[in-house]
Image 1 (cartoon, rainbow, N blue to C red):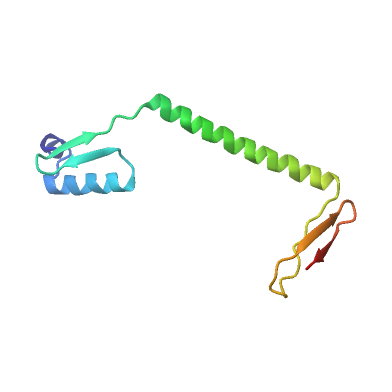
Image 2 (image 1 turned 90 degrees about the vertical axis):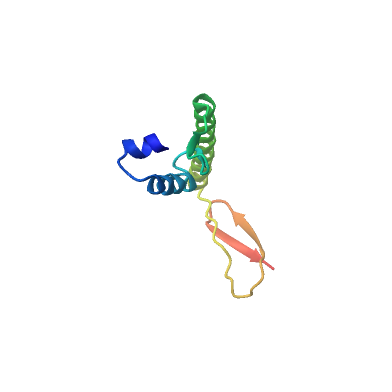
Length: 107
């Protein structure tokens, strides 16, 4: 960290505080040895990280696509879901009638 402080033209305590803030914010993956003044960077596997991110994006895409297909099917069949009035304070069942756009609530 001494070389880093010299390279960035700053003091060692200021550099240590800034690095600590970056680590806490999750912007860098590292840990600081305050006694020996050494910064240990964690080696991340870019391949597995990229693979995990692509899987997460694929799952999110599937979820959005299914929701859009369901929405378009409901619109096509003129199914409307309206929540019952919340005056009673109790939940109730809701029945739907396709095409009519009406629902009846049972308590």
